[in-house]
Image (cartoon, rainbow, N blue to C red; front, side):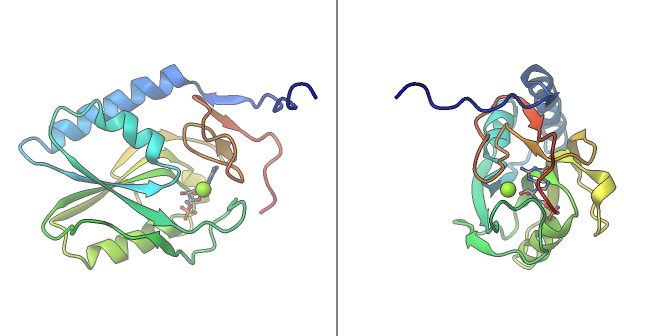
Length: 182
Ligand code: 5GP
Ligand code: MG
């Protein structure tokens, strides 16, 4: 009987207005850089889909989209470096200007792996757009081409990002005051 237990309020790191303003800036930058071309945006599931949906609506150039599914193990607080593709691309990227869209760049292992896999399929260019960048945690020296926000080493959720599949629907980026055990 009664209401389900409310989730405890999580502290906000980036509110939705701040995110929206930055996403518009990124879209303007990308539109400028890819003027006259039709970039192919590849969203990494599931975390990047909210970001991607907002970003493409502010592009002033045409684009095509596809998605790549990546295995996550349990609550995936850290990445093991062993990345498994659970959903492959639908369309060929041969000769395309590919932009990989990631929710967050942490150790860099996931992107490093994806870069290798996708580069082997002959794109004309391959660049990385990361909404969030935890630069201090980098293990592999990969550098995103477009970054929304550099953030400190906290475990963030919301705006597409989950903890154990929860919190993806939150409009702000929030953080867990007690980080999940690494
Ligand atoms: P990397 O391979 O760069 O270490 O990790 C990237 C992936 O780890 C992200 O795509 C995301 O799934 C997960 N990750 C890393 N840090 C966080 C975080 O603070 N919050 C959430 N929800 N996922 C994270
Ligand atoms: Mg995840």
